[in-house]
Length: 266
Image (cartoon, rainbow, N blue to C red; front, side, top):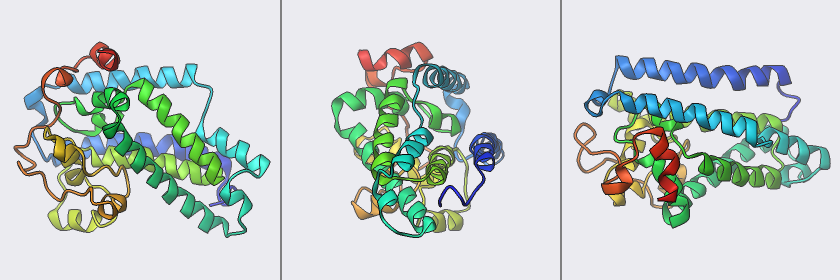
């Protein structure tokens, strides 16, 4: 996946249009074929999730002058990073870079559950009392900023191409939008897909109110790492239709945008 494989304009258009299209398509599909009743906890949670996403977008665009594409360009111009040094096929380098970045995100996710300071930020995501496409964009801005720094480090060290970075960013948005959705998949299709990627039924267990289930199924896109490192849960013990989602006690009292933004400082 070198930068010669796809035209930069084509890449930019894909990076803009695909996530938006996928997001609204999944909202439509989860309404047509819902897995759970999303309205028992009120529709207000969806509005607040979307509002937080708008706030985060403004913060990251206006206050953070850093992008993964810019890091990839910087590394490429200086010949910095593993795949800028190794003499391998651009396609092989791109594929390995995308897989390696997904692997890095798995460990980042594990860290947000195991390190108390990071959990204070990540619990904003888990405090949602149900799970649908909008849960995938419900993150504290500080967590997004630290995640950007972490991913930038790996993009530079790998020497990932611009094309590989954009493919990874598409996966990082579309994958979570899909596996956080309230979409009911045919069981046979779910069983096939979960051999490779995290499906909604796989990731829903991660949002269980039970902490031992929260500490499983960390994969945002590929499910290989959970199976490899024994953090995979096949099914939530309370069943998908009746399981409780979210956090208990004060940690779960995080419904409005102001509560989400202040949560890490409590």
